[in-house]
Amino acid sequence: MAEKTSKALVQAAQIGSLQGVKAALEAGADIDHAQEISGLTTCTALSVASFTGSADIVKLLLHKGASVTKRDGGSLSVVPLHVAATRGHIEVVDLLVHHGATLDIRDAYQRTPLMTACAYKQVGTVRRLIELGARVDLTDVRGQTVQNYCEKDKVGDRDFKEMHKLIQEAMETKLSRCCNPTCGKPGYR
Image 1 (tube, one colour):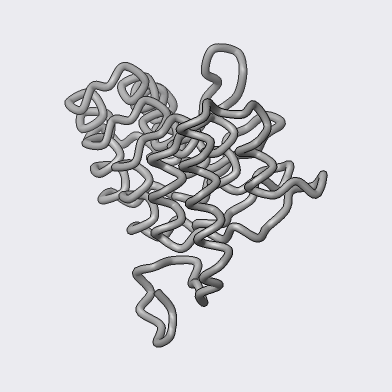
Image 2 (tube, helix red, strand yellow; image 1 turned 135 degrees about the horizontal axis):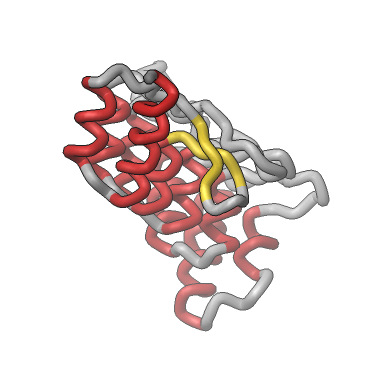
């Protein structure tokens, strides 16, 4: 029974059914259950909702205790913050970070959510992650920086210039940053 309701939870998140998610949770679904999606990877309901941008579902799952650090199966080993950043879902990014997601968490290739947002040309998400304190000085396993990810496909003149400007400004400020802006440590933003 628990396996069936847990599958129903992920399926409800996949179709964006807030009522379905609520019903599955009330029926005892494992909130961090991961199941195969489209034969590609295993995902939790939180990852699926982060992918689709269903902020109401993300909010509910976080309120009920879903893990922001549970990695998807498959070769990338991403967390919901990577997924939301890739898709440009700024509201979901905010929810995840304010519920404890680490801004500079790495995937299997040592890419951060900021790197993936750049790679997928999500200018608004790049801006928001930098505002939240994401580090622009990190490198992936190949030594690629955030700037390299933004320059990869020459995003389009205006978008490229905007992301490049945001990254340059962040590099120049060299402010001390905390992994979670809501931690309240003195001297950190």
